[in-house]
Image 1 (cartoon, rainbow, N blue to C red):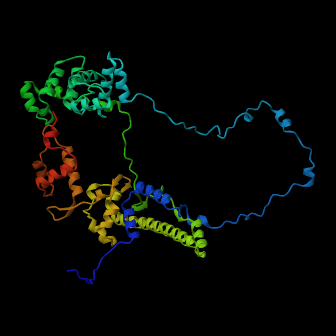
Image 2: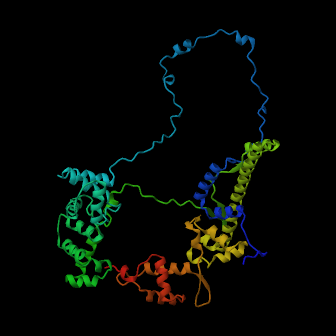
Image 3: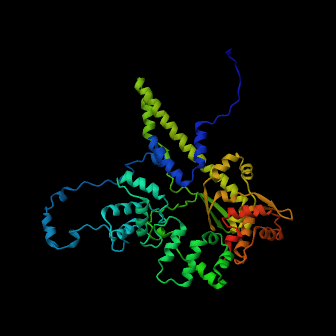
Amino acid sequence: MLRQVQTQKLLQKLSPQQIQLMKLLQLPTVALEQRIKEEMEINPALEEGDEADDEPVDEFENDDFEEAPSEDENQREDFSISDYMDDDEGASYKLKANNTSPDEEKREIPFSVGLSFQDMLDSQLGMKNLDDREYQIALYLIGNLDDDGYLRRDLDSVVDDIAFSQNITTTTKELEELLKIIQDFEPAGVGARDLQECLLIQLRKKEVQTMTVELATEVVEKQMDEFSKKHYDKIQKRLEIDDDLLKDVIQEILKLNPRPGNSMADGKKSFQQIIPDFLITSEDGELELTLNSRNAPDLKVSKAYSQMLEEYSKSKDKSSKEATQFVKQKLDGARWFIDAIQQRSNTLLYTMNAIMEYQKEYFLEGDETKLKPMILKDIAEKVGLDISTVSRVANSKYVQTSFGTFLLKSFFSESLSTDSGEEVSTREVKKILEECISAENKKKPLTDDRLAKILKEKGYNIARRTIAKYREQLDIPVARLRKEL
C-alpha cells in the first residue's frame, strides 16, 4: 500500500563553485594552463588581461600637436624623386630590405635527417634476392617489430593477418625462413622473439669465436634461467671452469645489447618534462616560497559582455530576455572561474607554506635525515583545512628547491620509534638502508635479515619484512640478484 510521508533529511551538498575549486586544486601547473585555455574557448565573457587595462586612457593627453606647414613651405620648389635616385644609383641599401643589425645573432632551426629504424631494415631487405611475394611478407614482418627490435607476435597469428590484409597465403615455415634473413640484419639481434634468442643471435654473429664466446653461447642456450637468477655457482659447476674464466663469460654476455632496436631508435620517445608548481629559495637562513604561475595568463571579465548585458536588460523583448539570460550566465561563469583560480592560488600557497615551515630544516640543508615524520593530518590541522583538500594540493605537484625538484607527496611519510623513543621519518630509514646496500660487498651482498640487524644496531628496531618492503619501494633487488663476481 502506497503512502505519502513527510521526512526531514540533513544533506551536505557542494555548490558548483566548490566543485570547480576542488577540481582546480588537483591540477598541476601545466594542466592548469590547458584548463584556462579551454575555459576561455568555452566562455567568451572570459578574456586574457588585467582589469587595470580597461581603464580609459586620454588619447589627447599630449597637447603638442603638429603644426600645419606654413605658406612659405608650401611654395617650395618641388623636386622629382628621380633626382634623389640619380645621386647614388648603385646604393645597395635601396635594393634590399634588412631589418636586422650586423651584430644580431641569427638563429636557424636545425632539421634532423637520417634513416629511421624501419627504413634501415627496409633498405637491407632490398639488397636480398627475394621475389615480390617474399619481399612483401618480409616487409610485413619488419613492420611488426616493436621499438626494441623484437617480434613479439605468434607466427600463426601473423599468417592469418597477412592472408586478410595482404591477400597472401603463407605458412609458419616460410615465415621462419624469412625471419632468419631479417635476423641477419644490423643491428645484431634484431628480429628475435625473446631475450634468449636475441643474445644467441649476437653471440653467433661474432667474427671471432673464442672459447669465452663459445662458453657464453652455451650458458645462454642451456642455462639462461640460472644466469638470470645469478646462480653462478651452478653455472661454474656445470661448465667446470675457474672463477676467472666464469667472470669473463659473464662479462661477455653482459656486453650484449638486450634491446637492439634502441640503438637505431626513431627518436620519437616521449619524455615527461617536469614543471615545478612551487619554488623555494633560501637566503641568509630564510626561506622564500613562490607559486610558479608565470605561464598562466591573467584573467578578466569581458567589458563588451558587461555592456551588452546593460543594453539587453533595458529591452523588454522576449528575445532580449533570452539574450540577457545567456550573457548573464556567461558573465557569472567568468567571475566564478576567476574567483576559483584566485582561491586555488591562495590555498596552494597557504598549504605549501605550512609544509615548508614543518620541514624547515630539510629545505635549508637538503639532508634527508632532517625530514620529520609528516602525514596529511598534521598539515590539515595546521592550516585548518580538510585532509582531502591537503591531499588534492599534494597530488601531482612538484616543488623546486636548491637541492633538486621533488614530488610534494614524497615529503609525507610515516614515523618510526627508535630505541631512544625518538620519532623518525621512514624516509630517513630508507636513506640509511640505501647507503648500507651501496656500501656492501657485491660478492657477498647483505640479506634482508642482515640489513635488519645492522639497522637494529643503529637504533632502528625494524622487522625483516619491513626491510623487504622498503627495499622494493626503493626498487632494489634481493641479495642474490645484487651479487657480482
